[in-house]
Length: 124
Image (cartoon, rainbow, N blue to C red; front, side, top):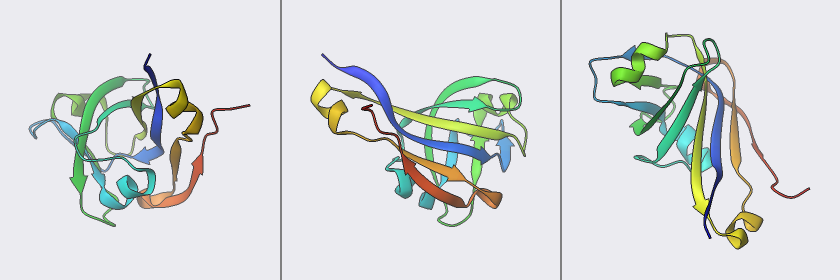
């Protein structure tokens, strides 16, 4: 059996742009993607800390070191520049894969620079 479990997370990234006319996705700085193993086109769930809005979309590649967190397409109406987001990526895992997996979480600081990367341990 496969279970949906957290693969990786970006915690409290700041929206740098909301572009409703752009093709839908969230553009994320390549350095952030690499730090947690998130990939272009991976499906993500996004939660807006300011208003509680949640939406599903996918990842676009942002320039490395740019700090870009741009919400594009229809989802851009759910955010404003300056909002803080939690970006979650899930994966389907067997019990054996789950037992060996520790999700990576990028804790974001000013200008969307990574303050630290932590791991969530699935076992008590």
